[in-house]
Image (tube, rainbow, N blue to C red; front, side, top):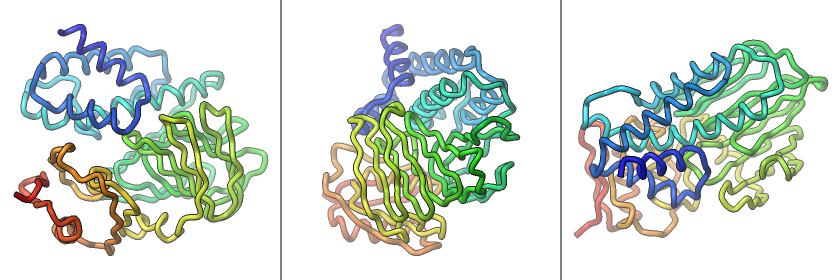
Length: 328
């Protein structure tokens, strides 16, 4: 059983799967059965990541990502381990994504990497060494060199960010996320690339960008107000003309959900509020819902409206958890 569980964890950590499969694995990680074997398998995967021949800056970033997600390589607190399994599963997806970034950067000289992590319920602005302005959404990580010295200005995103790129035609600005990248000269665009999501989304606000996907074998040139959605599992993509105010709502502290399943809405709420959602995936309706919440809306206000609209769910906020159940 021990070797079997380790193989499953390693397989999940090193490959990309559909959102449905990811949720099932996260649930499996979260149950109490064979918890010691799962703990050991995760520690072994972290050990492997630490032994890879990667720049020191990246190793430090991976360790910081573990800490930021609340994951410790060594701990004897069984209850604490059960609480963080879901975060651990998301971390495995993030490490898998980072390995692709390293592969793409392998021919470049090693540079010191800066890691900026945004905690739950926070949004932060920063300026990159080239003068590019970035706004990072909650539970997002941006990796970038302390100085851009090559032919391109490449950064790696895990999560969501808005980029206002400093013009420099000789040095294109590239955002990498999984097997997906956006290249711009001087422009503004939004990228949503959370590792637990099955979709990567790029939205152009102004200027012109090239979006490459499917292991960089396909590409699309976006025009202003266009949005490209790429499915990591099917490798398919489609173009949309979204409401730009909806795309940028997170920058104003607003919550906008458009035709989303409840479990995806809860995942988004876990980024906005410092609460973990506890619910049975099988008991959730498969319907999709749309909501818009103002800035400064509390979790209590949000859940009250969701409960009224959905109609057959109850919720209880206790401690740092929000329990969602079906009405009997």
